Image 1 (cartoon, rainbow, N blue to C red):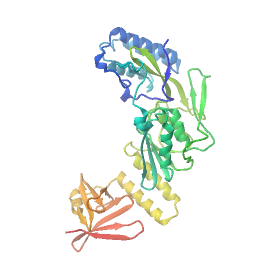
Image 2 (cartoon, rainbow, N blue to C red):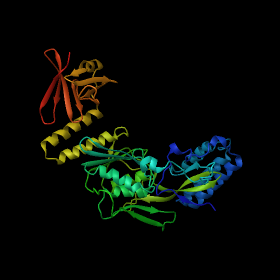
Image 3 (cartoon, helix red, strand yellow):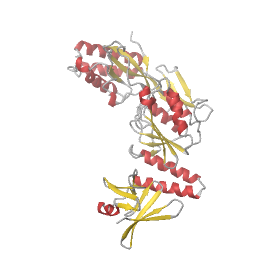
Image 4 (cartoon, rainbow, N blue to C red):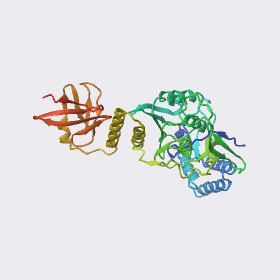
Length: 433
C-alpha cells in the first residue's frame, strides 16, 4: 500500500520548483522507460482517487493524466526531471491547484535517503526562513521571512528577531518571496501580534465533510507580544500557502494592512505520496477557510489592502507607517522628522528627473563634505572617504537624504550647499574651488 507522509502543515511547490525536489542523483544518469512512466502515472491516479480533498475532482485529474498518457504526451520523456515537469503541469491544468506536483527524489548513492523522501537544505543554513531584520528610518521594524521552515529550533530564531524589533513603533513583515512551509510556525509568528485571548484563525476540512477542525492563535508566546503596534505585511504572487495563511489571518483579524499584490492562491494542505521508482506526488488533502465567513484563498489569493507592485511594496508600506506615526505624535521635532521622511519616501516612489549636466554642476567638495555622481545619481558623504548616501531629487536643485534635506545655490559666483536641518536651522558649506 502506498504510504502517506505530511510535509509541515502547508507546503507549496510553486511552478519554479515543478521539476521536482532537490535531487541526490543526477537525472541525466537515469533513463526512464515506458513501463516506469506508466507505473508512475498509475500510482499517481490511485493516490488522487484515494487522497485528494475533493473526491470527484481527484478522479477528474486522474482521468486527465490517463488521457495524456494515452495520447502519447509522455512518450520520449526519458529524463526524470522533464517527465516530472510535464506531469506537474497536467496535474495543475484541471483546477489550478498549485499544491499538486510530481517530484523526483531517488535514494542517494550512499543509501542515506529513502526513495521518495523529500530532501532539501538544512533549515539552520537558511536561518529557518528568517531573512533580513533591520530598523528602517523612522523607527520602523522590518522582518523578511523567506519561508516558514518549522524544524526544531525555529522558535528561538523567531523570538530573537522579534526582540530585536521590540522597540520599534511599527513593524513591516515581508513574505513577498515566501512560498510557504509550516502553518504551525506561521501561527507562532502571528500570535505575537494578536491578543492573549485565543481567536479562531482557520478551519481545516479533510475529504469527509465531518472531518474538520478549527485552529486558534496561541494564548502564550515566548517573545514580545505586540497586539497594538501598527503592522504591515508585504505580499506578491510569490507568497504561497503558509505565507498566504499568515496574511489571510492577520487581514481577517483586522490586525495588519496588506501591501503589494494578490498572493499565489494555494490554499490547501499537502501531503507527499511515494509513487515508486524515486517519484513522489504532492497531493492536496484539506481545504482551508475562514471560520466565520467560510471564505478561502484557494485559487483567488489574499487581496492586498493597498495595491503596489512587488518592487514598490516596501516603500509604500514604509511611507504608510511613517504617516501613521506622524498622526500620533505631538512632538514638533518628531513631526518634522517624520514629515521629512515622508517626503523622502514619496520622492523615491516618484523621482524628479534632473538633467545629468545639471547634476554634474553640483559635484565637488564642500568644506570636507563630498558630493559625487555615480550612475546618474548624486551621492553625499559627510567626509571624504566616508560611506556615501543617495541624494533623492525633489526638484532641480533640492534633494533628500532620509530626513535630511539639502539644496544647491549660486552665491557670488560660487556653488553653496545648504543643509536644512530637522530642528529648523540651516547650515551652509561653500564648494571648494
